[in-house]
Image (cartoon, rainbow, N blue to C red; front, side, top):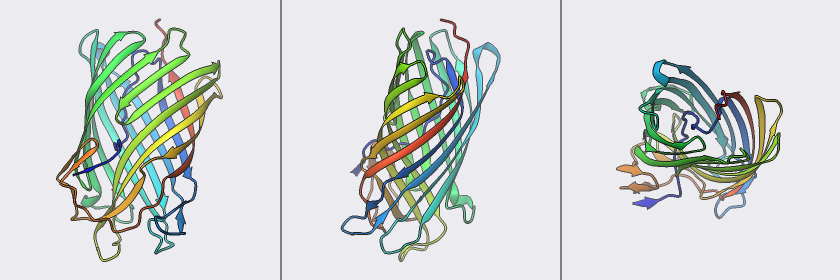
Amino acid sequence: MKHYFLPFLMLWVLPSAAQNYVDIVKLHYAQGAPTNFKNSNHNTTVKEFNVDLLYPIPLKKGNTLLTGILAEGVSARLTFLSSTITSVYSLNPKLGINVKHSPKWSGTYVLLPKISSDFKVIGMEDWQIGGLALLKYTQNKNLNYKFGAYYNSEQFGPFIVPLLGLYYLSKDKRLELNLTLPMLADVNFALKQKVKVGVNFLGLIRSYHLNEGFASASDVYLAKTTNELFGYLQFDLSKSLLVQTKMGYSIGRSFYIYDDSDRISWGLSAIKFGDKRKELNSKFEDGMVFRVRLIYRHHLEDKS
């Protein structure tokens, strides 16, 4: 088996009890600095965009219907042997429910089907199916804990991630801590009323079916792993419109192409069991990443 550093697919849940807002629309664009392929003077540049929409619908007894969609695109040169830029995309509808089990306990349960490929042809091999179950214990209005699991039928095989999280907001509401490990860690501090400084980590894994063959393989997929550490500034342009400017570094990054028949037995968080896959392309180095994020935020009633 092979070990990977914090790979995980993007997670989406309702805000925590102390978090008195919901982000309805999130847009981001990221571009990496040019980085060289291993043992080569040739380089590549990774570019990404992401659109994440959320529409929660209140139900009776404090429950909430969860609806939304996540769309993304990634492009990069994947081998120094060719100047061709490969672009892949995913479209991820989200449907679930947040259930209030008791005054202290609530649960989030989400179905996450996804189309993930180069979108040149859409077929059954482009579909993945995933799901999320997350329980939350509210200790007080400023602190809660979360635990659960995520599953997805990635191109490389079944993938399961246990989740452990924490949300904390200081009494003066200047310090905010949001953890959903092993995927996300975010700490931010309000310098002024409309300016925050923060640090966050994001560890992601994606897989995409490629309709065009590569090297000697006629049916292939791309497995993307990124572990990114950012420092950022957040500016409130208005009460509901925010912009974040981020600068960070990608650690242990890989964009590997595999034959479609070359898969693992199953994956559990950072461990891949039965992983004897052979990469068909060259690895490129880690490097700087620059990101801009635009957020439309809906503020909830403050009951504190």
